[in-house]
Length: 443
Image 1 (cartoon, rainbow, N blue to C red):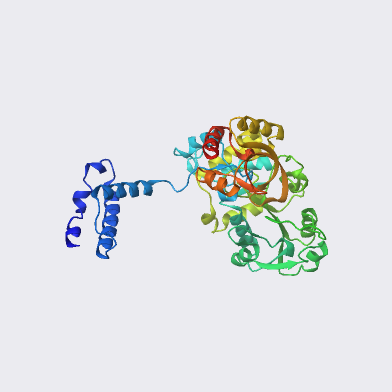
Image 2 (cartoon, one colour):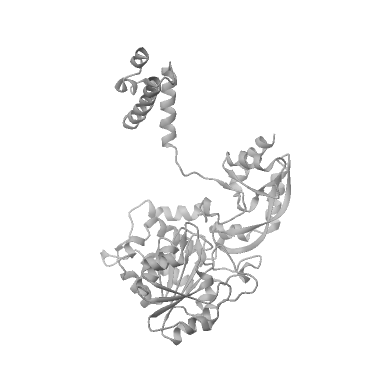
């Protein structure tokens, strides 16, 4: 054992071996120490009675390379779920990113008023385009919609009652719950109605001297069917005006153009909601809006001004990367250039186009068939509302195929014990790789 321990290399000499030329010495030293100490411990406990210096060198180099591998990496989404929460929701088009990179990679006028030569406000840049797009008095952007909800409640309802339908006390991914958010913001929750039915009179009967806001919440990730009823936001707005209260609609996700496959019949577009002239609304930037993660608050200028004065805003503000990409997305909306918004581009792709692409792929792959299927939007949007899609159905055991493709960074789905690659979310530039992997897996 002593002889074996004596053979362990000295760190200062070991890291200078030619095998490690070009590697960072500081990082290399840390890894080499850990590997040699691990080896020493195994010798002392009798787990090993010999070792190879060549093997040790390979282990250290491998660990060095593994440590520098990025944790985040691109995946091919063949599930058909466009806003796949676990895979990053909305994609950003390369053209939008290239446009935004001119600002991101340079010094900028983020908080500099170039005209007057003094400090400026970062939100002025995106607000002009957003106000034009939405047709509202003012807007504010924070880092996500949960932040937007928290900021609105903390600013206007601290120690006061906010009236919400019992059927809208949602919980979304990450245990984000409306009651807990309200409690942490300082607002007092006043839930009204029943789980499946809430009437306008339920709101009105619970208004008292401590009431400050009537709030409507989008039912993310679920829907209430059957014997059910909810109050239209327009009616809530009228009631709030009658009693001089604020009205606030947490949309969760909002969209601009009319959606295909009759999906717009299930949820109102932002434009229709804004016809009610709401006090405030908020929605996510990275869901149906199809941009970066952000919380967009829109409504009355005097209310937005108060939100900006809340000291919490500094903790919730967005950086130049988010603002730059969001602004380019909004400009694409203003020009109705939806091809620059991948979320919408995927959703608007017709079945005929999807089938054409699928057949082209199938001709190159032995052991698959083109099938019609259905999918969902994902990301808590349009809950339980499916729409048609086209997929490649691969021959073989579904679980085995799913694992084999997943190991090659292609994420498909299993449906009725069949493994499917839904082509709706596969980007054109990814098709060649999908074919090459399919050939190898099915061979």
